[in-house]
Length: 261
Length: 162
Image (cartoon, rainbow over all chains, first blue to last red; front, side, top):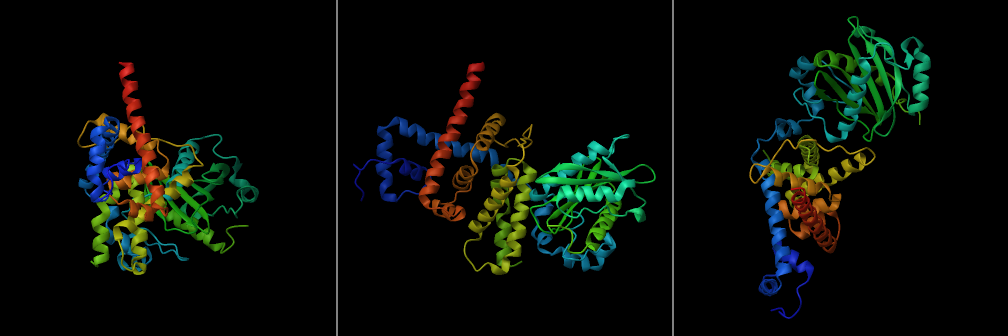
């Protein structure tokens, strides 16, 4: 039995509300509160706060769990998934070097990638509509463009050849990225459709490819050796996939030399 | 399904609730849950018994801390409209509590939600945050005082406008 004359502390009031108080002290606290309306009001306000929280957030418990959080989906390693015959038919893209492909239906943009993809899509939307000044350095000056971007960005910037996808390099620019400078390259197809390749230092080393779409634009994100890439373009996912694969293959060809420092 | 996976799966709704309150934005919240689950499944073989529930809350809390650290370098964006109004209670009250939570510092918000919404013990929260119980209690006390002041301040401000 604790001494009821021992004053009740602030901590004990919290512990009382949270059911953390030793049972034998409860009646002391209740007696204390009965005699002190201010403390009683405070305790009451904490209870009301808990009710507000539950009223606001308990409805989440009843929501159906989104498909992308189903354990079966998350448990199967993407690489094994790729080697499956069905996967090959779906995507026909096998990336080496530990880069896998996320399940086709996953429109997930995990938080780590969100900043990145948002910035890249913003840049994409801003510049693809430019007729006269879409880029700072024209694609005809490819060597100068890549040297300049390499010097400013701090890794080996490469402007991939996308001719096999019918795309010509329009040029590129330097942009502020999530954590330092970003390189931004623009490509154009025969009917004027534009695709952009955005790259910046990423906080993650290497990741799977992720797909995100926003309005009429969509993007594929991945990271390789500390550099994050976002290929953005029309919402035709197969076409975007084809282009991203080319960009990935080209940067892969550079081997371990993606970063200069 | 293994007992481990069953206990992970049973936690998904509660993790989503915690993440929603922690991150406000429903998509970011589910991103956090997804990353938490991926990590948990990856470590399935490393998990040698113990409390799956606490462990999942620990992963999610840490992921959110990392996320906020990377966001700290950028301007903050708040959703213009809360697209998930509470099911019960008035909509205005739901927004008030969400806004009050948003004004808390990260560790205090996590303590408040883990104790008041998720019903974890002080001991569990101390383990999740890697701090002594005394720190948990002082964070909780400060968080409660702050949220109370914000909620009351808003109410007073509204009354004044009327």
